Amino acid sequence: MPTSHPVLAALYDGALRVAEREFIQPMRRRALAGVRGDVLDLGAGTGANFPVLAEAGARVTAVEPDPHMLRRARRRAAGLGMDVRFAAAPAEELPFPDASFDAVAAMLVLCTVRDPARALAEVARVLRPGGEVRFIEHVRAEGHAAAWQDRLRPLWSACAGGCQLNRDTGSLLRARFARADWEVVRVPFPLCRVLVGSAG
Ligand SMILES: C[S@@+](CC[C@H](N)C(=O)[O-])C[C@H]1O[C@@H](n2cnc3c(N)ncnc32)[C@H](O)[C@@H]1O
Image (cartoon, rainbow, N blue to C red; front, side, top):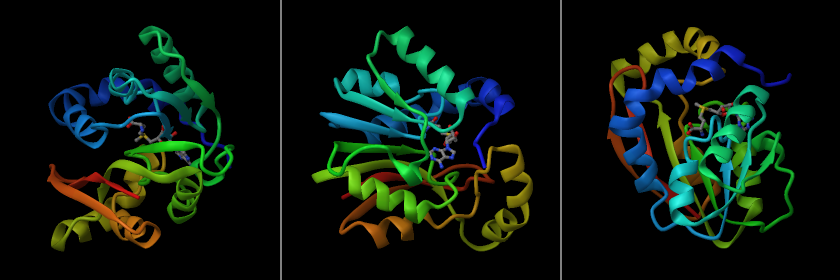
């Protein structure tokens, strides 16, 4: 099934403007601190990571399966004067040879991919030895909040392009990589807990 969410893509930057300024951009900077070399931006969306990656001097490749997001990401790259290589592909089938990247940026994307375990297998495959996945991912809450996430999940997913509120992405990262470290950032319901960290 193709990934195509024209309304979400059109509203995405505007809807997140305040949150992006207040807490998402600082998390992007922490997650991407010191990143260098060839960097894959996984599910790049509208290209919100590009300014941070440009400051880092990274050579950026962006994959994004949604054509409406991809168009906006291309526009953002052009506006920043960045030479980004783009591919319209899903994280589960990355069109790159093994060991192609020094780092993979997975920012708010493992919540949305259809098969996160397969996506992480692909991430591990395209990373060079010593490479890292840097991530910001909201994950399943605890206690009552998790139960409410379970109830809200179908509606949220329908409105947010397939985003799953209650995914245990931390366990998936630990299952795939020898090392996975993060800080937990508490944010308001329904996202509740965001992991900011790296794995490799
Ligand atoms: C919440 S947005 C995050 C975008 C961007 N990473 C950011 O930090 O703003 C999730 C993105 O994942 C993309 N996406 C959905 N399914 C995907 C898949 N199977 N592989 C890669 N990206 C996917 C969506 O099109 C969307 O652009």
